[in-house]
Image (tube, rainbow, N blue to C red; front, side):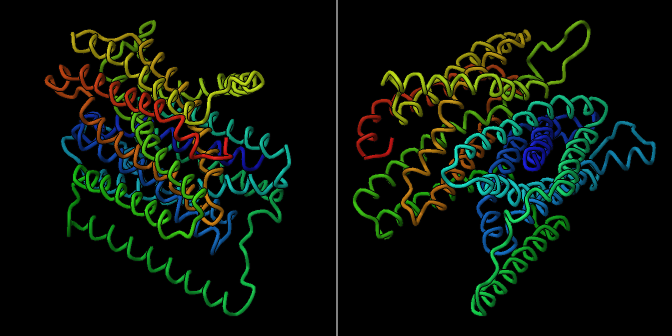
Length: 499
């Protein structure tokens, strides 16, 4: 119960802010937005999404080596709350002063509070997100049937929060963007309060591993000093940025980050394959993880368009008027979560029923189906974009059908990829291989943000090209699925005894 509601409120804060993020960045300054162009907004969105997943790696390391899982969740939640309230600061100042007049230009408070808030949310999520799931795993004995049931309930909390948040935060954002950000922070605050009040149920779970001897104690002290030095350096860099000592080009940073992630991933896999001391059978399985890393990145680069290009399409090119009331664009961000809640049990039952008849597809084939289904969703968007390019508004049903196909794709690929990574990873590289799975999501999220800048239809020329841009995504994603279908049998052989 404690972890369910903590995660529900954390996801409420995350998806509530995510539903507003790119809309706020691209909104004109006169309406309270930042007035950024689509390319810059997409790059910032991509970098934010990337770091949310990327910082899960050091977040897990800090919990394991220094402060323990429970404290990581607590401190992470505090930092996230501070981040959301920092983003809400301009709205709070306007509320106190009573000055809600349209602005002619951006103030330093607007920009600094926005970027500082994003940085705090990223740092806090990196500390909370991986460790709260680890606590769930520690609640039950390793082979207990209750473990899977516990995780199923836990993941339901994720989707409940992700369903409610875009609706609630987008409603407040009608009046002021910063009220929406503030509500997201209030959600995380509620999660922290109940986490503290019901923390007694987690007694003896997720506590830090204390040093066994003086040598380990000294090593731990060095690690703590290292973390503080790293945080101090981050603080200095942020301060220099805000003081104007240097500037950052988000588009350029996003491009460089893509290249760096690719180099890091390739270097890691080559190191494990050739210098990891693995048996031939283990090397084959690592090769499978390496192949799936590429296809996973492609999938998430399409799926994560939900919060960027598809969110902008809902805002700019969708007929959202119902009985004289205009539905906020952010409401559409709840569709995927409600589909997950409704369809996940049916997908689970379908795989079980097919397995009983020896008809269940192999894991690589499920992966391929996920990519093809994602592509079908973008094919729907191709036709919706043609309507928009003709000068008409598209019906909301186009986006709903797109999200339905994307949910089918997610349910086919995401649970399989996570499970398969743990099964294929050599014992001494399990944690690092899980890190690579999250790195593939980080890379896909970054690509999604960069692609969004080109398919958002922000100018007349971009609008005319938008249908072809979506069709190109279809070709890439479905093509990747087709390639994986061809490779499914060879990959299945490399997997050995893993199913």
